[in-house]
Amino acid sequence: MRVCWCLVLAAVLLAPAGMARGQTAATGSGIAGPGVSAAPVPPDSYRICPGDTLSVSVDGDQVLTRDCQVNGAGTISYPLLGDVKAAGETCSSLSSGLTTGLTKYLNNPRVTVTVRQYGTVGMSVFVMGEVAKPGVYPLASGSGIMQPLASAGGVTDLASGEITILKTATGESRTFRLDQLNGSTDQPALLQPGDVILVNRKMETRYSVLGEVPAPGMFDMPGRGDVRVLDAMTKCGLLQQNADPSHPNATPSIVDNPARTADLERAVLTRGETKTPLNLAALLQGDTSQNIVLQPGDVLTVPRRPGLRAYALGEVRNPGRLYLPENATVLDLLNAAGGTTSTAQPGGGAIVRMVDGKPTSLRVDLGQLLSKGDAKQNIALREGDVLFVPSKGSPNDSLWRLLWVLPRFIP
Image 1 (cartoon, rainbow, N blue to C red):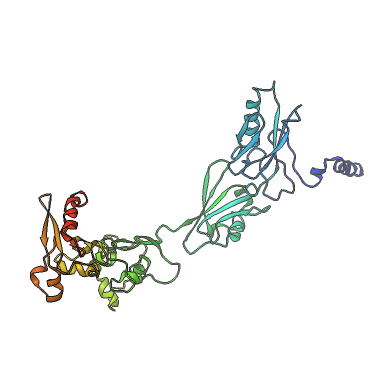
Image 2: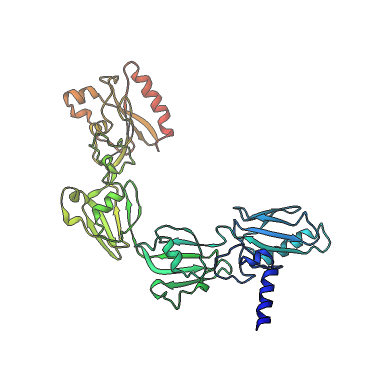
């Protein structure tokens, strides 16, 4: 027995310094690394990761024997061969690739690749999905799945209770339920450096708001508490200050402003096969019966109200395209455009209307309309009409230029 202990002691004292500190050495396709603190990895199953430092040895050639670090693109820079893909390869497969490349320059090259030092990714796992802090976390020796999940801050309220382990070495995946991971099933062998832990999301955790709203889309259901229709209106932007056309800071009333185009009285909540009419205008006036509690998968649709598009150009405060009720008149269009400017021609004004593909002009005396309420000047509008308010000085010349270019812009 005393002889055996002497032999063991001699082996330790004569071993290379690196192995005395706990390193693993191998040739050909082995893995070596100082102070490795990860779960054991079979020699040829570890996939090289960005950040790893590789030791490339070519027998008899000191120039080609060197350390190479795998860059962020997953390659190493190697003499004669340039950039060589390394990430995702095993030491053995990279050795074979380098051997093949060097055969053009050397006779029977013998190449050995080992991992001299693991990078951050090489000794870590990715924790993604429904966790508090997704990212890359160290894989401590002997740790299972729960330890990286704890490092990521735990799962969120939207987690389904299932996790998927993506194996980078083989491309395979396995799914587990968190409540089934106990001392017997959560084994370190389930994880290897570079693997991905994906915390799956609940199948139905969102609702949608579509149609004539400032920000349509899908929105997450909170983990606690109810979501009501009023909350959905806030999420999609309908309750912003500039959604009220009468607000001092209101968005100009262009045709794409949902404050003027949304038909709040005819919204629809779709839940499965059931469609429930909602009056959002009444809700904003205090009718709480319209403030329904939403469920995952619900779709709230706000349609565009019936109306017409018309234009106000020239000497108006907010020129452009506007959306008006179906029975709108010149006065409605003028009010929506903010009224006339101080340089407007007092008695000028015209409605330019396309008739059979040709622009025609209908004279409007805005002075009579605004100062005396002449109903004859308050012409009923049609889709695509243009109200032109000339400036003082040359109203006729400006109008004829408008008639010339109008067919190019309005169908």
